[in-house]
Image (cartoon, rainbow, N blue to C red; front, side):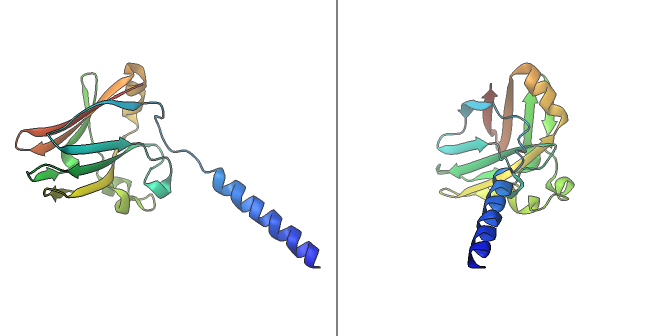
Length: 160
């Protein structure tokens, strides 16, 4: 009886691990990397593409995570509604987090409007329509423009 219980426990653990490892990758573009990042002096930005719902990705939506650290002496404002994705001459606005809220956990991961004083940092995910992906794949390059107000902005150029 103990052997049967042990075998069943091992089989359950193997099945649990296999299901956990077989998680669907939700990245719509996987092979694009930031080639240049232009920011105001001493503002650091690390962009990435989350690959699972637990990390804030949403199925059929282009999800981009931004980690922003203000190491400057000036206050900056991050506003997701002032972030645009440029592909060629096309500009795409972010999707409001509320429009993708039907996916679990989106609100906790989404980038919020925030004022960053010197030394402050924030992170969050911005969402763009899936329709921008085909143009991105066609052009092999796109820009992410973040308006920080008062004439300052962050530009991240992604290339394949």
